[in-house]
Length: 203
Image (cartoon, one colour):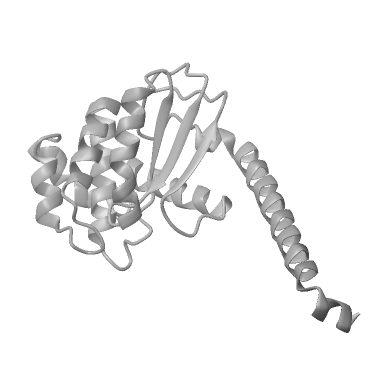
């Protein structure tokens, strides 16, 4: 057998490719099962979203404002939103880098407040504007976040941002996103899920 394999390396290559394909299929099947299992949480109307409440399809995104790949994906998502008005796009604030860059968590909390105060359209404006700064991987500052927030929140609402760090609806929403990401085995960002019959209930 050893001699045969030495003389026919293509057998090992083919076996390796087959194994890799099987692993990919198994991973995809496991992921699909997770999407189905946590479908209600993924499509929760408590998350920022744009698009029809009764949309037949939904795209769910987990992201961090300090994630460089998320920043690169943001213009693509913006184009997709414009090109697919019948699809609901759901944004899961997932500040996975907040332990390294606390401003990541601050930006997520402000984003949730913008959503709660103004709805999906204004939230998407905020989301795109923050990514448009191009400041990622620690480059974003509190001044950047608060400066942009002034266009979407009142002074009183901005003053409340710090109170959302440890309690309240915004804190709870971020904790739910974190728990959901863990259930989905997401260890980084961006992450995108699609649902062909999704419905979310708020704009």
